[in-house]
Amino acid sequence: MLYEDLISKYSHLTIEEVPDLPQGLGGLYFDNVILLDKYRNTREKYCLLTEELGHYHTSAGDITDQSKLVNRKQEVRARSWGFEKAIPLEKIVQAYKAHVKNRFELAEFLDVTESYLEEALERYIQVYGICVKFKNYVIRFDPLGVTEMFI
Image 1 (tube, rainbow, N blue to C red):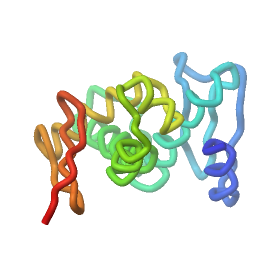
Image 2: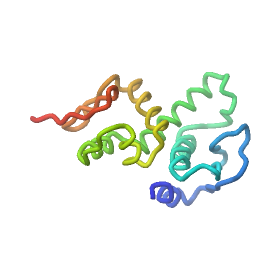
Image 3: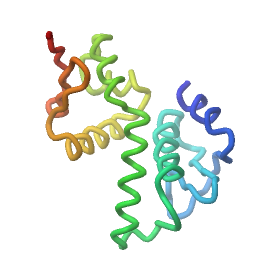
Image 4: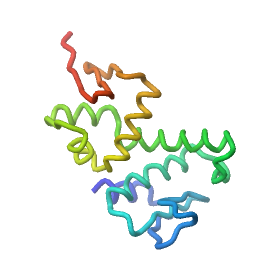
């Protein structure tokens, strides 16, 4: 499973599932420690873990006060890192090749929650616009679709 594979890849970090997180958070990163809500399902934990790894790779300091612009920017950067890890453009093309037909099936194919997929697609629209050329494909984010280009 993707969740267990990601934990193995980051074995140099302490990754723990705990029953109670501050402020009802699903995940938290600090000092090379990632805490995840143990009551979430594996798919939810995978999504949370990718975001917390985004914080590991992109954030500095305590950014829990989201009223500060600099902290909100770090939050967006970490979430974007997680989206790119869990839902890379390459996998969207692979899903198209596997005849995935809709967003529900795409979430299943990627082993992410539908809400995480929706957030990722919204972020991709912010970054790329409504569509992006990727290799010999055009990925359209809304409505979601992939078109193969013949050269």
